[in-house]
Image (cartoon, rainbow, N blue to C red; front, side, top):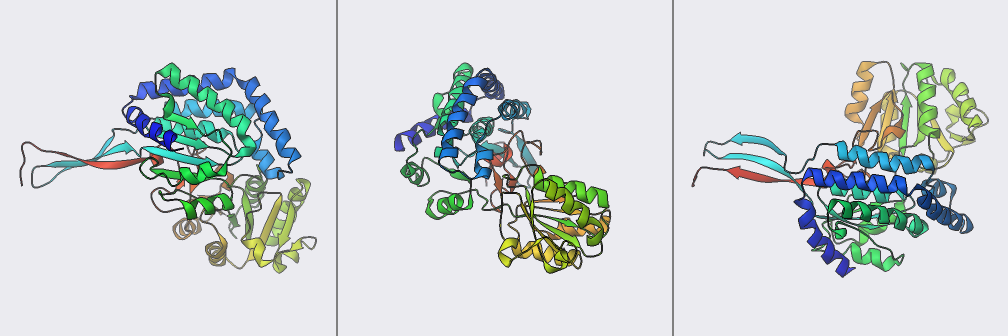
Length: 411
C-alpha cells in the first residue's frame, strides 16, 4: 500500500498538469472500452451476483451490486457527460485590485491524491475515476469484496483509456486485495493520500471516520423526508411521494419517512397507501395516521431514525409545517428533504430552515444524485459542512489557492 501511495503521489503531478483535451480524451476512451467490454463486464458481475446470493447478501445490496445493460450504458454516458463539463483547473475568480496595486484572486487547483473506499456499487469505480481525472487528481480506489470481479473488469477499461490518452497508469489505481488491512493502511497514509471519501453503509463510514489520519468527506445515512403541506396538490403529492419511495429502494436519496399535514392527510393517504401496497411497501405509522390507515403497523421511535433501504416507509401525520420541520431536525440525517406545496411562502420558509445538503420543492428526493444535478456523476453525497456539501462532483474535488500579480510591487 505504501508503494501504491508513492506511485499515486508521483502520478498526481502529471495529472494535475494535464490539459483538458488530454483528460477528456481519456474519459471518452474509457467510455469506449466500457461499451466494447459490456459482455465481459456482465460476465464478471454475474460471478459477483452469484457469490452474493450464496452468501446471503441483502436484497438492497444485491440491487446496488447488479450491472444491468442499462447501468453499463449509464456508466459510459456518465463518463462522456463529465468529459463535456468545463475544465475547472486553472480557473481564475474574484480578481480584484488592492490599494497596494496588487491584483489578487483565486485559482482552482486539484486536491492531489484522493482515496475512495466503497461498497457494492461497481459503477462507483468508473464514476470516481472519471471525476478524479477531470479534476486533475490521482486516485486510489478500494471497492468492496462483494464486487471484486466487476471492479477489476472496470479498472481494466480505465487503464485502456489512460494508455490511449498517454496518461500515467498510476493516475488511477485499483486495490485488488480484499484484505481489510489495506483499507486501514490507506486511510492512515499521511503524505500520500490527501483526502479519503468512504461510500457505503453507516458501519463503513463510521469505521473510516474513527480510524483515519487524513481528512474524510462523508455522509453516514440518507434518512430523507417528504412533507406534504396543507397547500399541496393531491395528485402531485401522491405521484412525487410514490416515486421518491419506489424508484429504487437501495439508494441514499430514497424517501424513508413521509410527513403529512393533518389538514390534507385524509384526502391523500388512502390513495397513496393503496399504491404503496401494490408496490409491496410496508407502512409503519403514527397513531393519527393509523386512524386513517388502520392496517398500518404501529411505528416506534426507532422507525423515525432508520434508513430502511428497503420497501418499508414510516408515515407521520403532523399539525403543520413547523412540526414537520421539527421532526426533520430531530430525526433527519442532513441528506435530502422535500416539501410538496403550492404555497410559495411555505416553500421559501422550508428551504431556508431545513438544514440538509439538498432541500427540494415539489420534487422527489431520489433526484439527489450527481448525474441528475448535471455534475456528470458523483463521488458521493456529503452531509459534512467542510469542505463540500451535497453531491460531490468535479468542483467538489478541487480546492483554491490565491494568486497575486504585481509590477515589481514591494511592501
